[in-house]
Image (cartoon, rainbow, N blue to C red; front, side, top):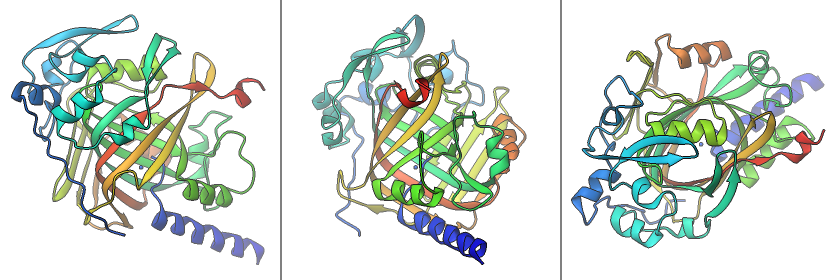
Length: 370
């Protein structure tokens, strides 16, 4: 009887959370719209060289035109000891992640940069030297599928210290997310994430209580298993700055009347593809719907956490979404999802317009001192 009651409470809490909050890995007000027109056509091209375009199926590190199809000139920049080509006149070339927010707002047409003023940058020590943190993503979009997966398969993919959050006995949560970073410090790029929703370090209490606490605080934890990107500067910063599992490959993300997204393997073949009708979107007031997502990972044998602050402006969610076509074609991410047993889609989140601040990793003292 107690076991049945516990299961019922778990299911109830899970679906309450799905209804009320954006999961990790992700009243109508006056609409927030952004005119992405730049006063200077060449600057607009440098900033938006990937927007609403589809990549060639092969992305090559030393051929930047495969990463930035609309850019015509490139410059070499440095991140630590690594040299990478980026679009000439783009944000990375001009600001090197230390932007003039007034200039960014003027040129990009995003309108409001108050979120970034409230999260000022600091020069921090990292494994590649001093870096300005957080990294700013001025306008981005994403679509996330939250899937149920057997707990034993999740445990097999996680380090011993990391515990999957299990809102239903025997099951955990996996998120598959396509990102389109249209205007950011790193210049535009796309990214795909496969992450397991996990418990915070040294969490106490039941999984359900932690889940409900995360919902109230809009503060979620995840362990990233795959994070392919389609520009070399994004790969280099992710691998050497954060020790994240990034590799360079082609990605397409488009959110219009339908969500359409493709992730390719490094041979140019489609790995996974997503197609679904876009739910009815709603816009909210600036700074009214913020959340925090924290990634746990090891850097040079030391446990670190790095977090993303999000300011969602236009978004929608759909429980048990219908007409979602998620095709797996045997590439590395398809294989990973199969190994995780991630099949049942619980919810789809479509975030058409959001602003992000990604902070550099900091040590997890309670784990490193054990």
